[in-house]
Image (cartoon, rainbow, N blue to C red):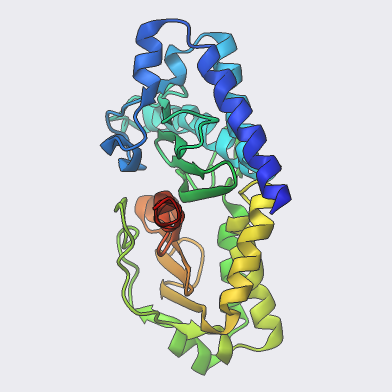
Amino acid sequence: MPDVRATIHRITEAAEAFLRNLEDPDQRAEATFPFDHDERENWHYVPRPRAGLSRGEMLPAQLNAAESLMAVSLSVEGVRKAHSIIRHETILGELEASDGSLRFDRLEGLYYFSIFGTPGSVDPWGWQVDGHHLSLNMTVIGGERISVTPSFFGANPAEVPHGAHKGLRILKEEEDAARSLLRSLDSEQTRRCTIYPTAPPDLITRASRKVEMGERVGLPASMMTADQREGLVRLIEAYVGRKQANVAREQMRKIRSAGLSDIHFGWAGGHHPGQGHYYRVHGPTFLIEYDNTQNMANHIHSVWRDIHGDFGRDLLREHYEQAH
């Protein structure tokens, strides 16, 4: 995987540059943790207190270094969406202030960067950015392998209803690709695809540290037509495509190697915009969850989870086994 190693090298250099910019001991203490610290798996997507160094505390050069770390870790589209989610806090704050529903600080500065372990070391290390509706968790093992999960992207409002940004949909592809696949199903496929009569109020896995979803339910790809399977792949690629290109290609290779036929697509709730809905794509190695039920079905939560490898657990297990 020479391309992935090259990506890891760039991510490592960007992480080292970020740390070099933290000359203040207090800032460095806020931003750095031992690799095995409990905080590494402490993630969430709701407004709440967080560890790490916030964007709002950073000097311009530090913020540029943090942005560079995010840029080399994601695809162009992934970076665009991540930045849009951060900027969306200002839009959400304005909308909530206008209708009297503002309860939380909605600030672009409330996204927190953390480094775990020592970038460039032969030992595992990782980094995280965590805030409202955005959580990226990366783990690097031996300078050759990388985990980019859990990966959460959300948007409230999913579609901006009015104002200067009216019509903005940050997670357009994630919704439209799923709706397109749903519309392509016949009545029997739709019946098989429906996993609950109404949509759950949030992701089933929430911000759990480990995925425990149980058996796959819904419509398996083995019961789809060739065109429908292509639609399923497009939906998966809407999520994988957030990752850096070399990492995304390796991810899709693993998914295809594990077998598309065993991937299940499940839907719950209404079929039309404005109706609460939920879907999941559950494969042998991964889980996608998407929920849009809050705020009159205008509030998206979406996540990519690795069944066995969130926070690099599978890669770490192999790494430690080989070391003994």
